[in-house]
Image 1: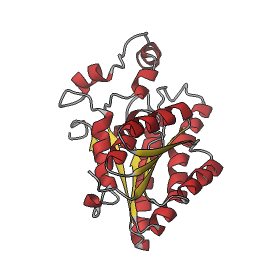
Image 2: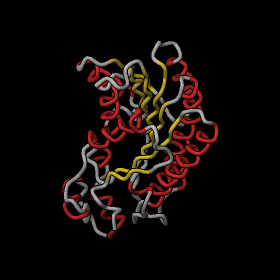
Image 3: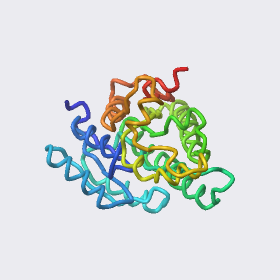
Length: 266
């Protein structure tokens, strides 16, 4: 596949999980990929995986909540022959806590990465994409941006904000006729490192009053929570990201695509 040959993609949160899988998928389709993450070692690991497959990529450390780092990172893309035509905003944080006990500082840290980071990416990348003749922005929201989840009010708020920001910016781009499409993807239960960072005992105390009440193995959760009974893989989410980034999706903008095995179907 080479539908993205001669183009460049900029991916945040690309050091692991969905961001890494999306970077690999875009590179396999011929794109030069700017692999960015606050975890520099993770970004470099993704770039190395791309190189092993014969793809082209550069790893860049990026704190998405820092506007100066955005301008510096995107300026690097100006010096390459490949025009920037794709932005995948995947950087985010997950947190499980009851609203009544969650420190305000934790909420603000979630907002800084997920909401401010997504905003800054659009602010600085969209003019470049438009200047390249158009392309696509794909934001990674969540099932939690479509429905409430107990114990995850702050996380739901950030993902819901991404969803609505995506729609508004899609319409702004449409009004400008700048050729930039903007869509959000909403994964459900996906086997990513983020799932395994949560302490099941912490979740149990927070939600049910006793340790160990919830198991955070995504495959175990999927058996009962996902209608089709299986967890999604990062690569499956990446396939949808790559489709939205391609010309095959040229008439899709302002859309939200759930990749949740039927969790929002009823």
